[in-house]
Length: 116
Length: 111
Image (cartoon, rainbow over all chains, first blue to last red):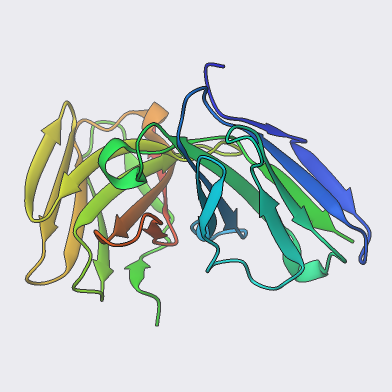
């Protein structure tokens, strides 16, 4: 597609519910990143994929967070037993090359998760 | 203390003004410096990218990096109401592909 597509755009979950957030990167982009952006803050890194390999998951805040990209294209971020502190915008970004620095990322518009 | 500090604003200027946005960082390993613009309910979009120290100009935008003082700046000349957005600085080092962002500065350009 023309850009990075994320779905759903908005998600309201009850505390304790599991959620799955989807990212469709730009076709052919090797690198895929997930970021979490709290209200009034900058994005914070969660995890990075190079094709289907998850090379860095150091930013995942707890073992309730899990991400996958099984075929090297679409990625899913799953949050189990959601808590109120998980409320944030979850941004997906992709880049053509192996790193985002040299080529710049293209970000999606994000999924706004509200846990009630 | 965060690795990248940025004044949250808001910063309000009249149309046509020169805008100066700034960040400081603490990690000497940072080599790549970027500025992103984020409109409300949208993802960040890359404005400027600089490697190491120096200046880079693109139209009305100029990015400056001073590694000796760990200071990053973005200047916007002849600001327009359409420039109203949140501006995020971001950095990374050569070993890690993830970006470290500042908290963003909200800019409002008044017509």
